[in-house]
Structure formats: structure tokens, C-alpha cells
Length: 167
Image (cartoon, rainbow, N blue to C red; front, side, top):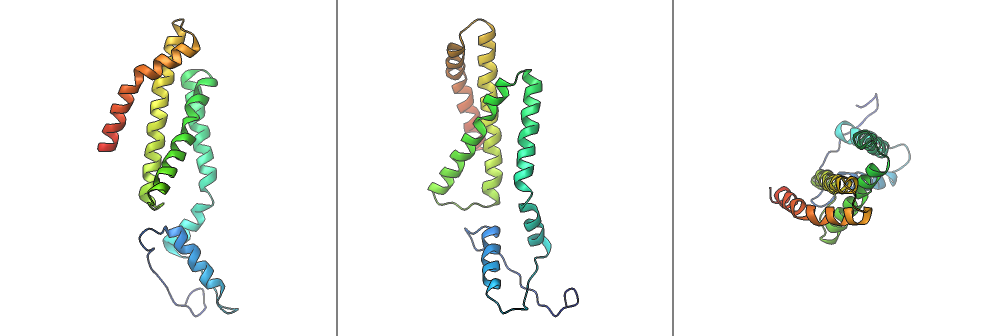
């Protein structure tokens, strides 16, 4: 019995290559075809996943705002953090396109990797922007400072990224 009603429990795992969200959506589609008066409820981790999925966008937006404001405080500028934050969608889009191109699943491992890639991309952007700001403060033009910073920081960024990837 569940909440005073006759019930039975169905449990399972998503097939390889299928996310839990996709599996739950398929179960909901199948259950919607059942006769009137038969219902279902998610419990346990499935219930928590359903509750949390609606909060993800808001939490992501809040996290971006907090990071942006911390960068504003660090650089004492509104423009520099904006440049650094613009790399986040580029890194995320590149990761999603690469995973989709090779046919890998959008699972928990991908999401952990995505967070890692976003962090690495932001760190690399901070290295370039910080170095360009130093050059600009020394009197270089904005264009020359950006180009020289990108050229001089390319090797350390590639080495850091390779160390990160190769583990």
C-alpha cells in the first residue's frame, strides 16, 4: 500500500547511453496510456531528480551572477569580468558539440566534465585577460596588448590543458 491505496513498486535503471531523465520521460509516456484511475508517483532519487530539475536553471543563473560579481570585485572593473564570462558559453557549446558529434551520452560523467571544462576555460580566459590588462597598463594599445597576451599565454594554457586532460 502507498498513501492508503493499493500499489506496487516498479524499479529499474536507465539503459546504457540513456539518461535517467530520458528514461523517466519514457515511463511517464507509457503511464499516460494506462486506463483512467491508475496513477503513479516518483519516490526516492527519482522524486529528488524531478524536484531538482526545475531548480537547475535558477541555480545556474545565480552561480553566474555570484562569479561575475566576485570578478568585478577582483578586477575593480565591469568590462574585464564580462570578457572572462563570455568564454563560458563558448566552452560549454564546444563541449556539447564534441560530445554530440562522437555520439556519447549526456550523463552524469558528461556533466562533471562540462563543469571541469567551464572552469578550465574561465581560468584560461582570466590568465589572458590579466596579462593583457598588465600590458595595457604599461602603455600598449588595447589591440596589441590582447594579441601579445594571447600569443605569450598560449603555451602555458596548452600545457595546463594537456596536463588536465591527460590526468
